[in-house]
Image (tube, rainbow, N blue to C red; front, side):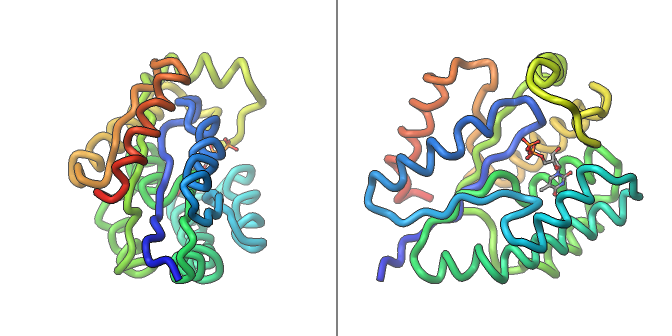
Length: 206
Ligand code: TYD
């Protein structure tokens, strides 16, 4: 049994470009001979995907939003993330608790100590081994989103909301510099992939 499974997360404001790299990154991990599960939050299990549909599309208070994303996360951890890691399978996850800190904390203004409380309750003993933060200014991200698709509850927020989300991400990254790798969302896709592969080559470090 391989004991070297890693938990890798991708983060960033909507439109920063992370989603085009998640599957690609997982494929590079597979090429190195590891088993990999690709998943996302909110989501990843049947129950958590149902919660996702509510969170993205129905009006609700900030506290309910935070409780629902953590409820989805508990199910995701119990049924998918922890069993995979215990079995030696890498987990590559599109968003995790850093998104809650950034969106519900920074964006909506929920006190960070309340989020920290939920984080300690749901995963006191687990953090991602590596987090790739796609960082982009909110104006450019908004232009990119408009070009692609219809907006959900978060994507239709104003630029000022995403500025707060971005700031909260950067503050969180500054608190855990060994875990986070910041990627400049303005870089061409190929340049970002070069950085991802270089970092993966040093994955014994994370
Ligand atoms: P996203 O990951 O951007 O998926 P898609 O590319 O399909 O739109 O959408 C998830 C949204 O949920 C995103 O706007 C951020 C939000 N979110 C939170 O507000 N809190 C959280 O804890 C998580 C995981 C996501």
